[in-house]
Length: 184
Image (cartoon, rainbow, N blue to C red):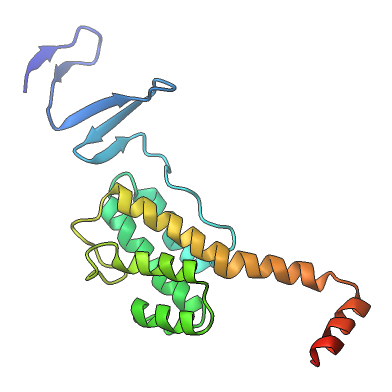
């Protein structure tokens, strides 16, 4: 550390190799890093949750967003817990992600959603259980988990809700005609 006296009113100043300041190429705003962690600005840089994400899971998601810059590993652990809760919301026991994925696929889960769920399960050396911290988790892993939670919610909750809304707005005589056709 080098010492220098500050003539600009900030008192004694020192340089410290543990910190790095980078500047946005677009706006010039500074970002202060401590190792791999952003300590300033403390903003929510991860994407917001899908509006249809159940409230209990949305709380975990928002907490993961709030700590993302300070602790990507903690953020990833919360998101894995959110995936486990999302599996339970989709009708599975929520105790074992692998078993839940298998059951959801057997129940007609689209293959791409299965790939997304399997990605969540194996990110972190395949040995990480939801809600635990993996020493290998980093910003990229946590970012993928944010995207996957929203992707799964979109495919399994939002899209079916939107289709139900469209279908339920059909005229009553048309709905009856469909029921007659299908023998329901």
